[in-house]
Image 1: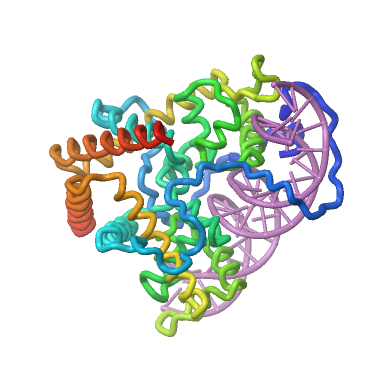
Image 2: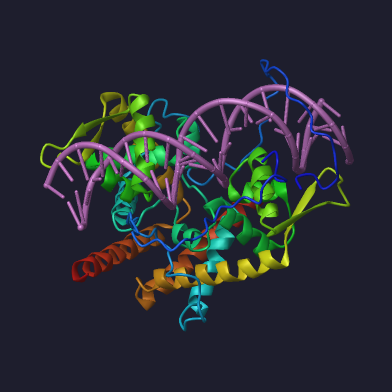
Length: 192
Length: 192
DNA sequence: TATTGTTATACTCTATAACTATA
DNA sequence: TATAGTTATAGAGTATAACAATA
């Protein structure tokens, strides 16, 4: 930052052909795409997709699209990643750190440091899984649970403020729409 | 690089208690809340807000809620912040870096480094605003514009995949719903 | 051999505090 | 005095590569 003159920031490594390919399956986020657009692949851009894109951009002019949990993080002196970790642990109970990483959308290498810091804050504890001695399970401490309760409350409040922007009919429409999306995702997951 | 016009780098001095409170207004993200829940403030948690929260959690089991642009970032060797910056610059044209920070949802202190790195990558250029000599305008280079076009394409594609999860009726419902939200946000902004 | 996590390294992101230049 | 940006610092997030223990 203070010396952009030093080096051209080699974010990209020499992309050496790596055969081992550790994979580290990260679930592919939500808006992933399979590589750069090679040749304009048919359905890449439709009137409907552009319309949705445009609407999202308009929304972005009112509230930042990056990091919807920003306010909650700041209020509690936590990072977005930490908030997500605590929320998943509170929702699902003790969880393998690998699965936790997948839920959050980070790699196994990264989750180690995240859990390290939460453990140092006395919010989370680690334990070996008795069934599979390779695996590590993370769980909330009593302090972590108390914080989770507060975070959960904040998120519910935020959801309420979001619903305030909708007429009652639109709220019902939104619920139904989301439920149908979930049903479709579930059936897709089953066939796959 | 970081200074359109040149200037000697100032030194840093011993920190002292600061009362000035620079503020740095960050737009408050999207799901902000005013402080910790003090006493359970009435409408904080309603059946509807809990229902929406639950639906979102279910969605999070299929795709990570943190960082929807993950796949696009990875494909292009960019960070989420960088993608957001490029998309806003591509959409809006040359922009004051302060406004850019607000759009992205980061502080003025942070945007400096972000633009530094994009500049080092030859994707963005800086220039002084002739009207207000304090302000700095960022704009895409030709390379940056070319990359923006690719990113835009990827996002459109991702929007299309999202719409694939919806029946045609639900797509129309979603568009209408978003348009009504935008209208409400616009009228709120006007009165405020 | 494959899988689950950790360690070491190097970079980006981010906020805080103090400063400069302009208005 | 207030505003727009930059600098310096410190800590957190992140991926890559190499490694350990278990299966």
